[in-house]
Length: 143
Image: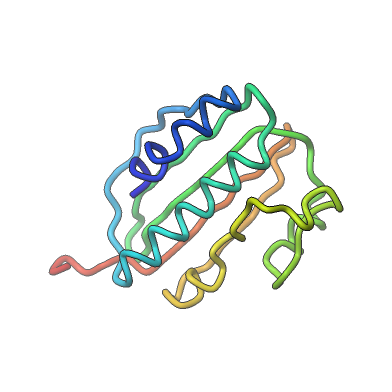
């Protein structure tokens, strides 16, 4: 799904001259709606593109750790205040007036994460940009 989301947005990545860092990832499976989980990933990738600076970068990593499937979408960009970033997990919150009323942007997929018994952690990177980490229950071996 991560590769598909990036491939579908290749024109947007190229238009902003964004680099996608190749990070070693492993397949990660979680039970749930493939359509909704794909939409959540697309939302995170869309936000990584829209709220990035020209010539910036995006890093996507997937993996698993025991009982959890992991997705990390990380970007460079301007330095953000962690207290403001923490508000992004609240309904209808955005950072700064320049991000309200935007025709682009689909939210972070918080309701999709919640519907799949997962959690979303957001971290303002000290160097600038954002790290979004989604943890979802891992699928059993029979999935």
